[in-house]
Amino acid sequence: MWWTIGIVSINLITLLFYPSFADAQELNDLFLDNNMMKAFIGDIPDLTSPEGFLDSQLFFLLIPLLFIAFSITQGTGAIAGEEEKGTLDVLVSLPISRQWLLLHKLISMFVTLLILSLMTLASLVTGAIIVSMEISFYNLSAAILNVFGLSLLFGTLGFTIGSSTGKRGTSIGISGGIAVLSYFINALAPAVEGLEHARHLSAFYYYIGNDPILNGINITDICVLFSLSLAFCISAFISFNRRDLGT
Amino acid sequence: MDNVIETKNLSKSYGDILAISNIDLEIPKGQVFGYLGPNGAGKTTTIKLLMDFIRPTKGTAKIFGLDSRENSVDIKKKVGYLPGDIVLYDQMTGNELLKYFCNMRKQSDWQFVIKLAERLDVNLEMKIKKLSRGNRQKLGLIQAFMHKPELIIMDEPSSGLDPLLQQEFYTMVDEVKSDGRTIFISSHILPEVERICDQVGIIREGKLITVEQVNNLKNRSIQELEIHFGSNVSKEKFTKIPGLKSIHMDNTILFCTVIGSPDLLIKTAACFEVTKIISHQPSLEDVFLSYYGEQPTNVE
Image (cartoon, rainbow over all chains, first blue to last red; front, side, top):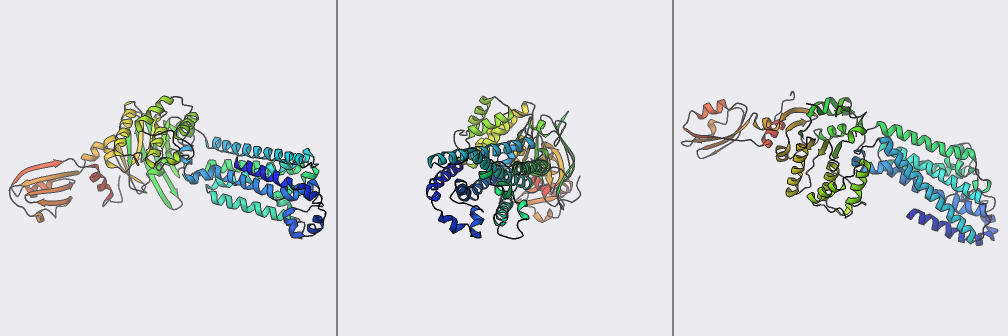
């Protein structure tokens, strides 16, 4: 709940600044030739357009950062968190299979992320209406779908590492580290020679590389994000079923 | 008689470390079985293997004739479990937690749950994070007993309970037993094992040293004797007798503990005027310590 309130508030407040941005053409002159800035706001042709504003202020860094932090917290806490706290003992003594337990934890994470995504979409639509921003609802939805897919990917990664190791700290470290690396590979690729080829290894490329806020849904991107999440889930089922629980 | 718990060569190792080795247990229905051992002996490892929290390196475990791993879910429908150092969900109240477990177990006898809570004097309205360790233990006992399982497995169950509630717990155990159900309890509280168990298995360094009826264990091989003499006798006359421990001479009375046959002691005492011999029933602690003391490494 608090995450939802926080993200919704950030979105609304950010959008309130749009009218000032819309008229500030000098921002393009200031930032668009600056490769270091592009690592944090994206390689965007026009910062003052609605799409450019949303990408640079929210979609490139802030929203995925918040979503991934939330999903990794959820994912790593689901099994590893319980195991480290010691509550897993009594839970697995109930007449439920390990697969059932994992499935329900995953469903819970999925639904929570979905609600967060929908609330984020609602807050952006509301904010856009308030500041009279002309933006395609379809493209906005496509961008949110990608946010959902990206955060689900890292959430399931954290979940898999957590349920395989039983160690929350390790899970957060590895999945968070991969997320950061993935972000920078994608963000720096336009400016750094040699990183262009590595860009396709970054989850962020499939999240924002084809700019859904401008171009709508990219089926390939969606398939990559969701199929990787599915692969992580399957891996979690296999490893959790086999290992000793360190209760 | 059907065995509720049956293990054959049950072993668990972690790399080079052998946690338990070749544990063979047969626990019949309706028995209260005590599993005794010092810290690190392998009691909790055995319990975790029975509950399918960990998987054996070798051997098998069966509960109700079902394999503990393959049929784990079916087994757990009829098992109540209390871990050592129970940790519960801090943000829930006792009510919420027990209702959650009832739903998971598809159990609907909420009145029985309330009755248990009243017997153990625990406040179900308070958030668990505000409960003392003893009260959390009580909640743990309730969730283990509330669905009237065929088998209850408990690891150090009365830890954290005050003496009055320990008695209430013992009464609960007696009720389960008279209902024809089975209890497996690991403990290091010897008077507790003495009070409630029918049979005791002693585990040490991962090996099952012996399984005995509690009465046999108490009676076997250890005797506490009090020999009254007609006049002062030197304690040194008795100090070299093998198997004689805790020798203490109080004027004309010799107090001692004999392990094994008292024959040499009696023959030595008979050299003097003996006015009375009193034999005290040994405590299980003395029996227990005889297995922990100079224990030969090869034991049956």
